[in-house]
Image (cartoon, rainbow, N blue to C red; front, side, top):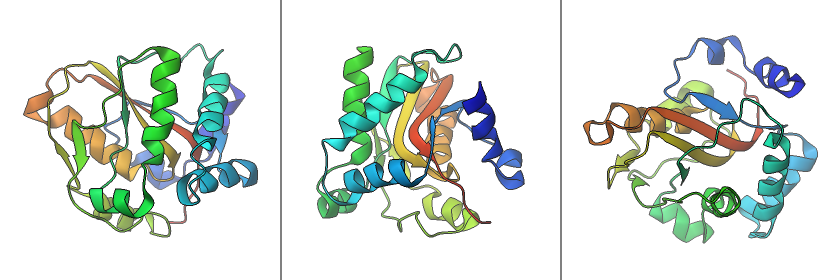
Length: 192
């Protein structure tokens, strides 16, 4: 309960008043020094084995969370093919592999794609983040699930997650998607 209050305190007025297409966010940690170290190593320094550690931390924090509801599908945040070539892997997919295994859930990393190359979100203001990811995703194959967990490493404004959730909920191809939870390891603040 204390962590939920802490997460709500991380939201500014802009974030609280912004309409979200996702339903719930599970983000058990603040983006502080220790967590940032692990995520940065995973994301930018090819320490893929840190995905297991971060996934285990997430699972441990949500183990006794009475509000936590298991979804029907794990969906990693899509990465554009150009960025995938640059980085060599998608850190959200690496985290998702552990979640899918632990919760015995299907993992889908090809139905939704990032069809437009975008700037990195890091360093952009909130409004620029929204513009950066607008219409950046495409449905390649309809999803036949009512409850989906969208996985990423860090949530700052939620612009990317919101854009994917919006696509899933309003697309005529996905009439069955009713609930989208966002699972991230940490929540970061941003200046507006």
